[in-house]
Amino acid sequence: MSFRNSSAPSQHPLIGVDVGGTTLKFGLVSPDCQILHQFAIPTEAERGADAVLARIAEGINRLIDEQNGLIAAVGLGVPGVINQRGEISYPPNFPGWGVVPVAERLRPLLKQPLPIAVENDANVAAFAEAQAPGATDRDFLFITLGTGVGGCIISNGSIWRGATGGAGEIGHLSVVMNGHLCNCGARGCVEAYLGQRYMTALAAAQLPRFPESLLHAMLAEGNALEPKLINAAAEAGDRFAADFLEEMGEILGAALASALNLLDLHLVIVGGGIAQAERHLLEPARRSLRARLIQSISHDIQLRPARFQNNAGIIGAAMLATTAGAA
Ligand SMILES: [Zn+2]
Image (cartoon, rainbow, N blue to C red):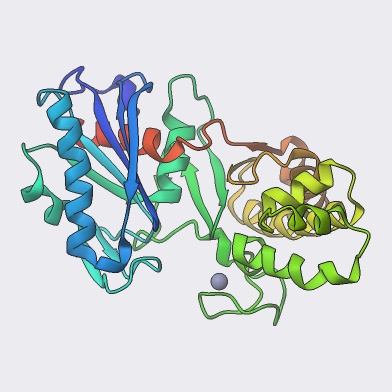
């Protein structure tokens, strides 16, 4: 059910929290999806679960104070799998967390009782695409290209969670049999090619063979080698960078074709740091995807960048909060 048609408990603003491994982003969001105010503080993940939860509560309490307590609900997007009991299990970027019931542990730290929704961060970003006012797409695959490669299946406007809440991990679809080793322990995963760290390492390994590449000068100017810089070089006409991204796009398209063929989905929405690399990454991905689709679903396939970029985590979390508030 869409929250827009549900009986929200109030017209008070919502709080959306984007819990990242290095930064906690807080936003005060109006019921019609506008960010009214936002700020960020360091996560300090190395200090452990209690310290991170205290910092999350600190940020939420700051917004509660600023609003004189007039808040409808809180939503959090967290980088890990959330099970049916609302627990996050062994989030990879949060050392020593184990299994943590986030909402239950957060509740006593807040200045006032509020409904709390907790969801995986890729699911949160996908939810923003599915449920923002004006959104019309009800069935799609969402993929986010960042430090890791996350994903979410949206079915009839809702997050499809699978048996234990872990569905949508498109980053760990296998694209190269016995390929590069992935952080998850398997070989040849999409993430082992398109995850930021892996993509950067692959480019760094190949770059010395291309002394004419513009990237050498860009790195000498103090830029860090990362997917965005590779795209900037490709946009400036660099052959190596363009060929490299085209290969990444082909791998991405192959993974997406497997997913679309399996799920009979016709739309892919791409979020994350390099989702705007239209010419050098998304277009090759589109070609690769179309070439691999079975005929019955190949006629109306779309692949497009996400509508919400940097603020997807805050907006999606706030919209999830509304569902918690209406529950
Ligand atoms: Zn993997």
